[in-house]
Amino acid sequence: MSIENRSNIAGETVPSPAEPARDCALCPRLVAYRHENQALFPDWFNGPAPSFGDARARLLVVGLAPGRKGANRTGRPFTGDYAGALLYETLIKFGFATGRFEARPDDSLTLLGCAVTNAVRCAPPGNKPETSEEIACRPFLTQRIEAFPELSAIVTLGDVARRSVLKALGLKASDGIPGHGSEFQAGRYRVFNSYHCSRLNTNTGRLTTPMFEDLFARVRAYVDAAGVPDR
Ligand code: URA
Image 1 (spheres, rainbow, N blue to C red):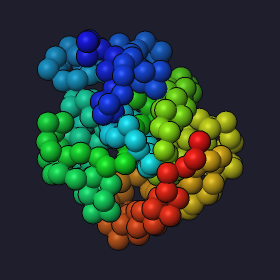
Image 2: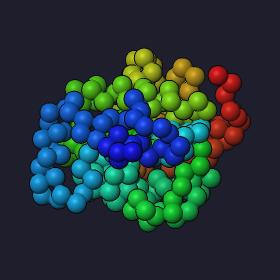
Image 3: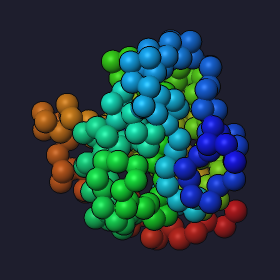
Image 4: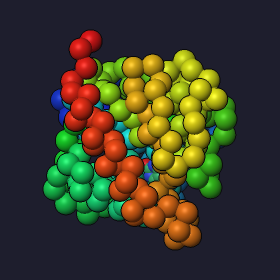
């Protein structure tokens, strides 16, 4: 089986409409950036970073887009750059992951009833996707959400993720409350919104570990109380 279309969601058959092709060509600017990185760093992953986690996810965490030296290098969301440390340590703390996060895709980290993906799957220059790229990538997010039969909660990291999730569900960005700690219903899912766990936000104190953990404590309680949805 080719690795080209493989999602690293455990147990998922491939190819999946929830995951872009390894050589997805939908966004010319991101393809050009990918080619630049391929020429400079041929050993890097350099492609749409597949979603990561448990096919029976009850929680989906949605980030912005792969960091150039993070998921774009390693091929796993939030792996290899700073943002993953707080995210995965917190997922372990609240029982959504087990093992050890060592910032490489072959570490022992395993997600439990949880998956992690990005609103935009390819690394954008300067970590800033364009609106057209969010739109082009959105069908994958819609399919990703719909592919989890047991999903009840979504954590959005940052405002691009919040807006993308709402639009992926056919809602308006204004249907969900912005800001860290907000919580709202979006269709059949409870959405918990967090500031992005980027180095900038944590170094400046905009997002602290207690703020992040408080949110995940609420998510844990919600997911446990929701049980497995009857669909
Ligand atoms: N790495 C990701 O995969 N996504 C982000 O949003 C940031 C870093």
